Structure formats: C-alpha cells, structure tokens
Length: 87
Image (cartoon, rainbow, N blue to C red):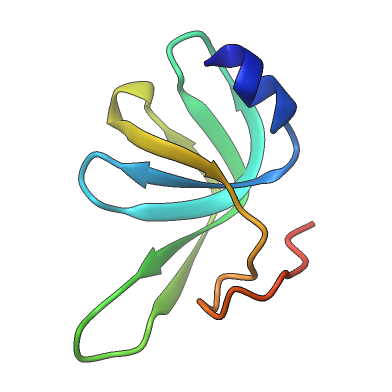
C-alpha cells in the first residue's frame, strides 16, 4: 500500500471510512499503519432530503484501522464531477 500512497503524496484523495464517512483532501503524510494526514480536507455529507453538504475540516488525521477505501480525487466537492482547484 505504501508504494501507491507515495504516488499520491501532495495530491487530492478521497477516503471512505469504515463508519461510512466520505472525506476528501490533499494527502500530506502517511505511515506504515496507513494512518493518513490530510490538509484542506472536507467531508461530503449526503442525505435523502437535502443536497450534498460540504463540511470543511481543515487538517485531519484518519487512523489506518478506520480506512476502508482510498481513491484519487479531482473534483471540487460539489458533487458535479467537474475538476476543481484544491491546492
């Protein structure tokens, strides 16, 4: 896993946590236990009754045992799939 994460260092990623949270941000650091440090991060909160809500988190640490999926991300967080400027 570490070789893949090294390719994504300082690039935008999205993390799906084991409890269902969807967190996006710029990968600033990681370790051998897959703990992740994200900067300029935000959580995408989806609801059946409301549009997607973006909650800014800033600097955020995700424990490795709570990471379900890591993916590269190039959207701006509004859910429209259009490339945005996270940097």
